Image 1 (cartoon, rainbow, N blue to C red):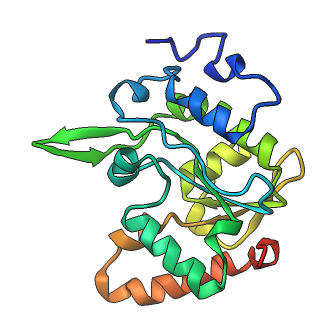
Image 2: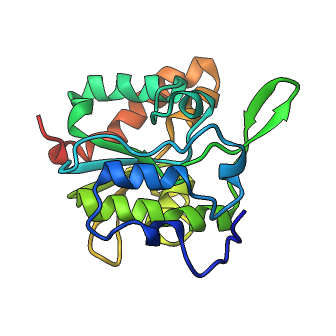
Length: 211
């Protein structure tokens, strides 16, 4: 297992002009942090390489880890519902996560989600940076605190900043909002109102979506 602090990163072994498919293959072999040792596979981003909007989540969950695709579990289904409500074709948007492997702890036979450590997030940022280099979106939506911190390089109070844009040092705009899993964890009687408010956040990015 490679040391998190190693000077050579896994992505450095991928040619600078590599596309998403080649980056996806390289990420499968990445062991720059411990998470990859136990995950089934790396879950890389998907979508058109020229997408104007990129959605960045936090990390894959159990379903994504097994399927090898981002946002295919309960959170993904809620995201699909939101995109349908907003008229966003999913195949026009690039969807990915800040962390590419599923971190979990076993409880009996169940694999329960565990938040990645800051060092692990930083180790995985190399892959998100390479995705940004290839896709070059006009704007990004950060879904949750881990995604927001990875994208703007500082802690972000999601509840305070939700619905707002933060400009990165490279000028790229990042819209802050909740991860869909936060809505699923909320009280059932409040989910309809929470979903409507979440749609209001996401709607700010509608002008960047190709129809």
